[in-house]
Amino acid sequence: MASDGETCHSCPLDCGKCQEKPVCGDSVCSRQYETCVNCPLDCGACVVCGDGMCEFTENCATCPLDCGGACASGTLVGRIVDITTNLPIPDALVSTLHANPSDQFQQSTNNLGNFFFPELPASSVQLSVSHPSYASLITSVEVNTVATGNVTIYLAPLLPAGNWKVRLEWFLKPADLDLYLFGDYGPSYRSGVVDWETPDKTADLPYASYVGDRALGFGPEFLTITKWVRPRQNVEVWVNNYSNNRNPLSSLSGSAARVLAWTADKGIVVDSTVPASLQGNQTWWHVFDITPTQAVIPINDFYYGSAAPCGWSYCPYTPLDIFSKRKRK
Image (cartoon, rainbow, N blue to C red):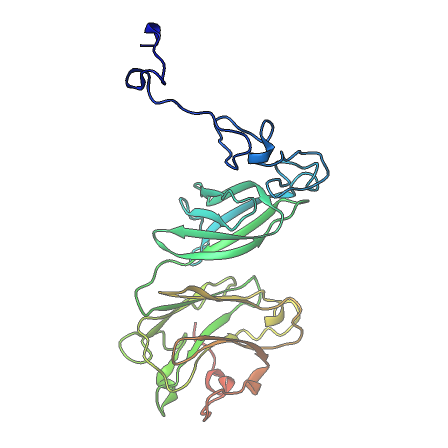
């Protein structure tokens, strides 16, 4: 016992082994006893905030005096939405990736599908969005220091393996747009067409269906491929302005039409909108192709009437020739 005059030197059994104090200059910085103040030989010179040098251990958050002032940051307000219904998705997990500073942000959306990050770095920031009922998504958003950023991020519902889904929506005019799927599976090309006239081909080639045919604006219309069978050539996805309202306020060029497509394994693979800069009276929009190996080829070409070309090696149709008869409502 120390009260009996024992010490760690005379009786280590009772007093414990002596802890020798380190010697400044032994090239070992003992954090218990030595610091940059009392032993710069072992611990290095102290980093001084305000010395005009942004040291390796300093940054805009820990030493704005040396590292260029306060860190630039911005606010991001976002909303996670179901791509098929435009309804908000509660309880979606939104996380930042590779944000600077290194601390990551993570938040679950509220009942309105909203999330809020108050102090993100002012730069391009990657967001990871996940939900058990939807395909996960990684997307980039720009964070601005002078204005609150508002973003809407769409998630696609999970699909069975091998499935594809295409969605068309548009504004008030034109009155009637239509989705078309052209699949090349044999000499009788018509067997590979899915549209408002032949909406259910889920029991045979091309194993696809059509739902929609809205005539009063907005849509939406859907194409669903329920089983992928390798076609002879690319499957083509088109949009037609059936109403043929060809004035600047109601043509394809003024429709703000948007086509989205997603798959079982890749989530959203197409998000195309008729550009606001489009001029003219185009009635056909060739949106994208799906190759036999299920790769996506963006097309985004616009045509008037029967001028739309066929992309296949033989061309048994032009769209207007086949669909010129009056639609039955």
